[in-house]
Figure 1 (cartoon, rainbow, N blue to C red):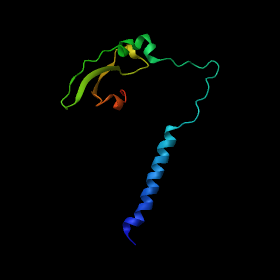
Figure 2: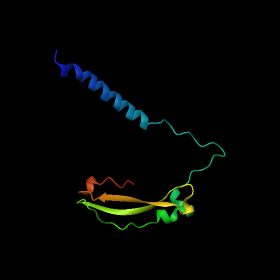
Figure 3: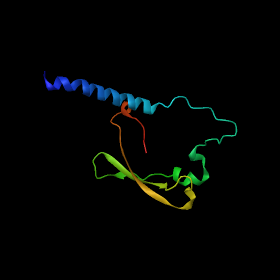
Figure 4: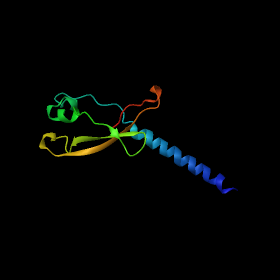
Length: 108
């Protein structure tokens, strides 16, 4: 019997298992309703101590790689204490979509 034929079921099984694990790790089931007295989750952009970070205007410049633009995004080191002054600069890059139908949005 050909070795490639014997290995194929194992490969198919491994890929099926990987796919199943990926799907189940992304689905956590229904989100429970908030209990009485539970803390309400607020939009971080509405917090006064985070406004300097969310209000940044990035200065996009050409990157060393053709077709990309680069900028620097300042973020707090600890989002639970953004006003302690500790920050770091996160380099970010973007590439323009080749057509309106191919736009997928931004991800930081």
